[in-house]
Image (cartoon, rainbow, N blue to C red; front, side, top):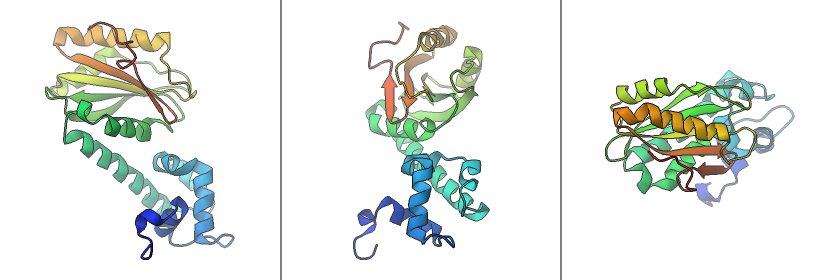
Length: 212
């Protein structure tokens, strides 16, 4: 790192700095490579659950805590980037945050970004979780949280563990139902984003948002 700079290190070399030690069977860099292969690279590592990390031979509670903390720091850093300026002025940060937050969930998670009148982020919450293929969404609960945050608008987001980013007919119906719940409160639904692996599909960008 001193010779090349931190940018010159491979993913495994960077991870080995956090791990510090390997296992009786592997040197630390080899151990780091094994971990990345197991979780699907850096993005998978950042979103791996504690139980998933502890299931890897050689990772105990201390190393698991350190790796989980790094993932949370990255997520918070991206959220800070969104909070500093309007979300729609920083689409790359929005997409990166959604991918890190949702792309490696094994079950569907439905999240909502609550925005102020300047489209700056107030809060980013996971509101509903479901099975491998579907989640039950309650528009009334979204309305309650939007009022709690004094939000002027929201962005909806959920993941498709199937890997297909295009919205289903159920996704479109849910979007319409949420719009109907928020319209009397003068809260706009700006977009509904679907995350599937590295892809983020925007219903607004593809002309699929129902009329407000």
